[in-house]
Image (tube, rainbow, N blue to C red; front, side, top):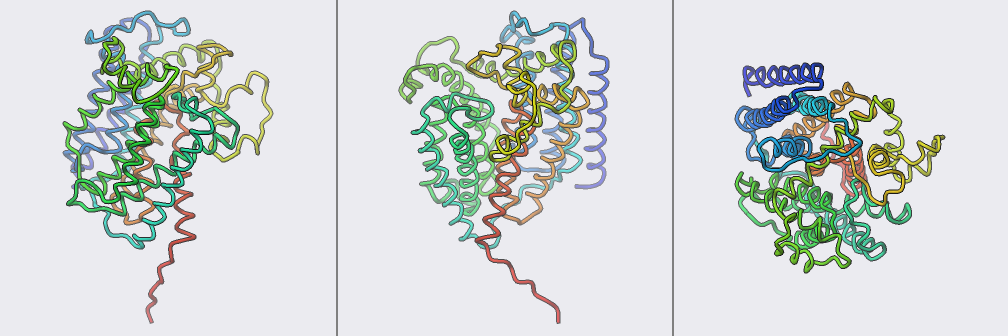
Length: 475
């Protein structure tokens, strides 16, 4: 990529970020109909401009890119509801009592600034130059053997967990299951990590650019069965997460997937997702019940309904800016402390904190938002989104800095995946790209679990099982 293109990419990213900052500084009540259109159109401009940067200027091949997947999910979560209302596809209707309508402009400007900050961070780091096929790396047979061990261990954990806890474990919790004791919850997290890391290792080790279907059909078939299980039991976030890891590993190792099949896949998932949301409320969850809902004429089973359900998380940003600082002070990192300890295995048990009775019930923004919206006795959670999560703790400056860091991190792993021949980096890139696909509906610190745990697992495998290369000295 020549210097003029690089200058344009960085300067345009800085300009977009500055415009977004101006928009949030000037955001205030009034003329919501007009300003909503401005924010939505600017968000669409950011996405399509990034498509131009990634595909035309950087010459990255294919639409399966870590930045584009994050941005499209970000738009669906934070802006789709407002866009569908704007074009008459759906009506937002009456807002909940926890929301202050005069904060609509500010909440959308806040989301827009976060989107622009991510793009800025990503473009400052990520390099282009096409897709590299990672066929040649050392000790491929050993990595393949380790990948199979990790994957089938994840399968065993999945079966044991499902038999131990049952379908209640997969009801679509946003932060992983809260069912069972600490050991059971740890098994839930481990099964997800082992399955995703294992399948990425297997597919990467069997890389053949001239083939369409990879060798090793048994682990892929088992993985698809587990994806179907997630969908039947209602854990749609894990379905998307695990599916995206598989998709990125396939594209890195085999061939690109064109634009049309990707769009069809998104539309099909939106349709099936709306059916899965209804089917998971049945007493008996099975593929038959899911098919029954899909084939019914239920008005809430449609592509529009699926996208509307995803975009409902965007209202949490409006809830957050309505509550803070008008009714509550910024938490200044207090909600992140317990969440950070939750990333460490048994961290909250090993490092208990002195907290007031009010604070003890909150392990993160998801629990606080649930308490604020539904009250202390709710038996389900409202989840979170990445903008509301950063805002509640650190305000609008925290949103900009946090999203900038996220963009820098994504750009770094993209650059390492393209330029490095390290097998570990390539696997972590596929895993992290899958996480970023769903991260707009999660809390910010989920990126630590998405990087540290697979990286630690792969580092241990490399340290214990992979022989060290002998350095050739010069005599």
